[in-house]
Length: 123
Image (cartoon, rainbow, N blue to C red):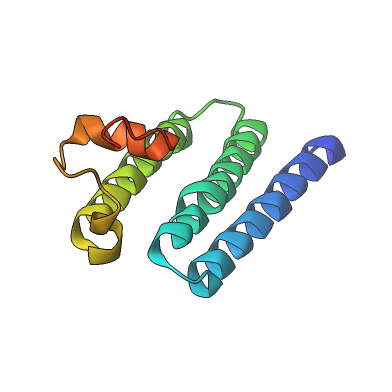
């Protein structure tokens, strides 16, 4: 195999391992649920994406044909991770008494957007 391709694959694997480590540490060490969401959704997604791109480059270089499997896994991961994080955050907001006390009196989802911006029109 070409040394340049080997270097690219090795660099992608190292970058992926670094982001996976950062994501795992963030999940384990951050203080509350809302900040823990950033570990698996941001850093770990980049880490897995980097490893899958390294797999695409390696198998394309060794076999001479492009495989779509890793690309589809990468796209699926990048599409589903933000959606699942948003659903977990919304569920946490609805279940947490501390967070509920900061919600507008109506509790309607349309009012949450103004609360998140810091401009509560109801006050």
